[in-house]
Image (cartoon, rainbow, N blue to C red; front, side, top):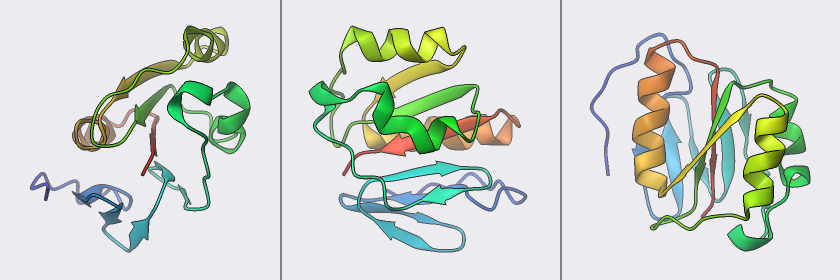
Length: 122
């Protein structure tokens, strides 16, 4: 799925979300990835959604987002309530959706100059 919104000032806006990765303005990334306005963490290796813990997001937490969008593949799968609580205790919102919805929402929030991070599972 290709996205048409133009966030000209956003180097890490997501241009396309595919079945195995995403295309940003400057590069394509295959596999699970964490992206913010200024960072791309292409070596993210998360466990299954049901096994995710806050420790799986250590590198992301260092980037200090205000909201994290978790894309769980081609369909939405919910992590444990403990993960939501762990993010909330740090003052960070966690929203979970399928990858394509997460990419659309990420671009929208990026365009609103929010401190957003997206973690996509492929």
